[in-house]
Image (cartoon, rainbow, N blue to C red; front, side, top):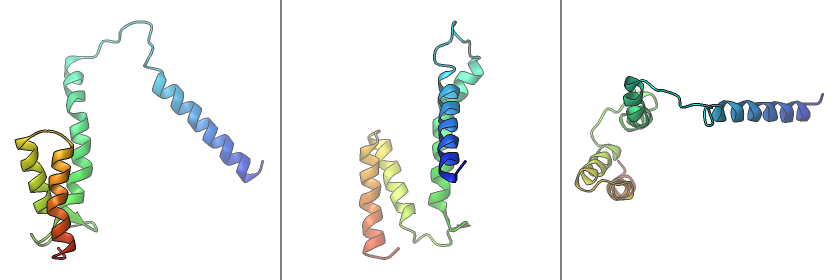
Length: 110
């Protein structure tokens, strides 16, 4: 088997396994009972995953904690957080954070 065919068969096999694994729980014969503690945990899982990805990007540079407060990311996060507290949503905090981040980064070189 050539490398191209081996790669194609591997990708196809992975696609089949992924399809089965993801759809196995969608159409059960009966309702699956989930314990209350697991339901509570699943409600905060997306927030925890987002924090695990975003926080290191904000407070670290190349694997080390930032050494100065003159980093454009810190005021941008503060602005986005304050905007979110004022008016929850997605687009508003994003634009508020960018409105603070871009001038600091592009004009002042933070």
